[in-house]
Image: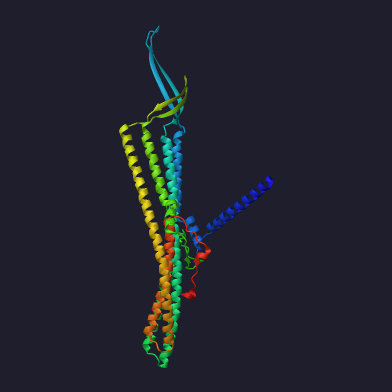
Length: 460
């Protein structure tokens, strides 16, 4: 039985590992693609987010900033590692003296010695009453804060991705509306010509229909330009600023959510990276204050040195080992002022944390209420669209029957056109408010597939 359990566990681990590697390989294969305008792509929202995380320069800068703070942890621990010094001294010594014993004349002799003295010495901190530990803890908290800053940066970039993504979907829907409008005005122009040739309508109807058609074509051109600008913005955020040969796999839909205001605020307080980063920064300031207060304590360290001299008439060997208790350039006034500075910095960080916490609370509540408002706006916009559609159907029928005029038809068409655009704009605002709420909370809001409300073109 135990053997079977072990085999089963190994199989589960193998399958799980295979799945992880498959997902990783899929991401790597996407990242290894060279996106040039000769390559056509179809991106989902998730694809755009993954590309932005891989290529956006702001995210890369945040990741490198993490590495900077991570290296500071090792630098702080380095105080407990020995420092080594080495050098070579060269000396030349000359002595002169007189010797006259048993000689008729004085005799002067010159004595000179030369030598090399290489020296190696080392110092090692043994204990500093917690100063190094406090510095390490401060560096760790700053590193954790930088990781949260990266998450917050990713959080904001994802919001920008969604903002650009939904704006592209809106621009595409807008183009569809104007394309339909151009077709309708072309039909109206043809009808106006037919009625004019039969003598049923004045030429004013032809002129009006021709003007409406030209204006609709101009609006279509502007809508296409808006789409290109929106795609350029999305490409920039994805880190592919020159790549535009792609299309999106989605359409403008409604993603219903199931979350309360209280849950939104609670999740934000627990998960918002900006808030966690402020908390870690306050902890780092607290550790810095602890390190500053311990500057009053001495350091206990070990030291040692070894010298070996080589000369023309002497050899020198010197060895030294010891343990010492010392203060490093201790200045009581400067240390006291440094403690005051660290204390003020810590209180400032705490105040900043409270300020960010209040801001997060306010922004989450505002984003939630905006989402509720946009949800109601969709209902109102849909009612207005249905009324405008029915009105347009009636005035179109009246004009085809020869009892309506061009002004009535134009008003009906404009009302219907604006109602369609207002409805799509309400859906856009809802999706943007949904993305903004996710940004303010700091984590994605989960929803099931059956909560996606697809919008049928026939209803619009």
